[in-house]
Structures are given as structure tokens and as C-alpha cells.
Image 1 (cartoon, rainbow, N blue to C red):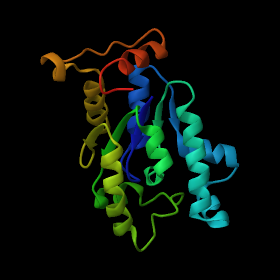
Image 2: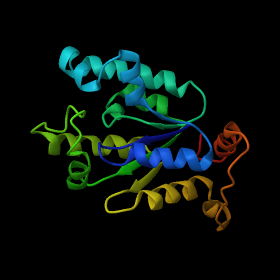
Image 3: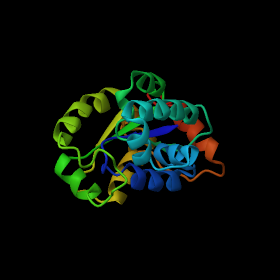
Length: 192
């Protein structure tokens, strides 16, 4: 399981789809799964039940997805705020896509489905989440001002490269079966 975390607008969905396609595994967005299971938009869950109830639903959904088949999994921006979720992510390859706040607002500014986007305390929310992202991640990748393709290729190289071991770079070969690719990655030190 390769898990993408980061603030809204970091590029988790776009980069996640690219990585999944390149390595031949499904892409799953936990927010879309929640909306499908709840039969309503996340902003409606926030409005009707509050953020705490949404976070309970989110934590349970992520636990379910992490126990499922191999995939590239994108998590909502606040998912790492829950200790239970952070503990479940231990042992998985967790990629933190770091985006500067101004860039995040620019990218997400037209998306009215994001309930926290217009919160007047957004800068404090952003600052408060950075430590959780960094502490949870096994790989950190900056996304501000970068093309999606470059970000995706950097992550794939870091997942498949062997430079840490012997100084050479790995070669990504699209597998015949998706589980074979992730099994190979999982067997490497520092990946899981």
C-alpha cells in the first residue's frame, strides 16, 4: 500500500492517479469512498454531523481501506490528525506531498466541496497539520511550483530506486500483475 498524505491542494489525487497508473495498481481516494458509503458529500457530513463525527467515519474508512487490496491510497488532508490513523499507517509507505499554503489555496480555491477551505483560521490549521504529516511520512516530496509528472516520477524513483543501497537507480517495469509490483516494493527495507 502506498499512501499519499498532505494538505488540501497538495496534489494527492492527481499525483496518486499518475503513480497508480505507472505501477499498475488501482487508485483509491478515501474521501470519494466516504462519500459513496455515506451517499452524500463530505461538506454535508460536516454540516449535519460536525467534524468529530466525520473524523470517526474517516478513521474507520481508512482502516478498512488499509486492510484491503494493494493500491495507491490518497487520504483527506485532516486524516493524520487522528492517532489511530497514524498508528495504522505505520508499516506502510507514506508519501507526504508538501505544498505551501498560498499554493494550496490557489489550487483548491475554486472547489466548494472542501468544508475547511473558507475557515478564517486556515493558516493556523495548515501550520498545525505540518508536524503530523512529517512525523507520519516515510517520504517527503515538495509539490509547490512543480509539474505533476515530475512529482510522480520523483516518487516512483524514490520507491523503486536503489541509490540508498548501492548508488544505482532502479528501473520501473510495469508488472503483469499489480500485486507483484507492490509485493516487490514491500519487500524492500523501509517500504511496506
